Length: 232
Image 1 (cartoon, rainbow, N blue to C red):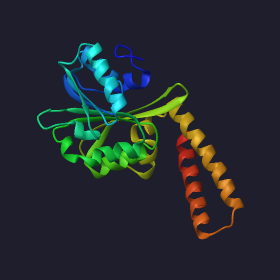
Image 2 (image 1 turned 90 degrees about the horizontal axis):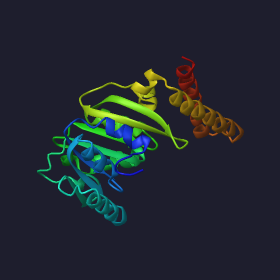
Image 3 (image 1 turned 90 degrees about the vertical axis):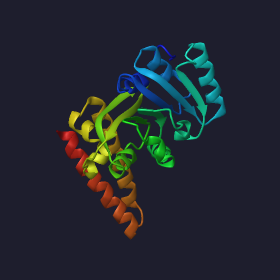
């Protein structure tokens, strides 16, 4: 992977960046994504934010190598603190982290979201917490993708400002992904249901305390609800 050829995961993220956006890529690592967006005339300009010195230096080197220092600013900062007043950022990408870390980044500097029209978020795990954050903060899901790359499954959530309603099952599975019901979606949740079943079997062998019984019932309900979706 490099600034000209992204991974399948990052290339999918890039497809959701609006034309002529000003992008802040948070946790940019080598800054491949912002370089790709500017090279392909998708983004007018970009900010590559990194909180760790090593990746920050890598991003600086990549931007210089690609001769994009006039279009991409690299900043060593904590999350959305990389966005400064006057940047006029219209889209934010955050990829390659867990859902809880992504939401904590969004919550830590809420003023940085002013003027931002779209969030493209790619959690490695726990996408549910992002959907819950979106509900609580007046963002709506306009699209979702689930994909397989290098034997790992990734979800990409695209948010814009607005209200939405999600059931508990939609928070877990994703409202768009649940409807599309792709092969990757089916594979992921079939595996999850199997794992829940193993956990429940182990719980049934343990001392049946109120906590154990409650957890067992919770898993049984999940297995039934998700199983019904998988049958469709």
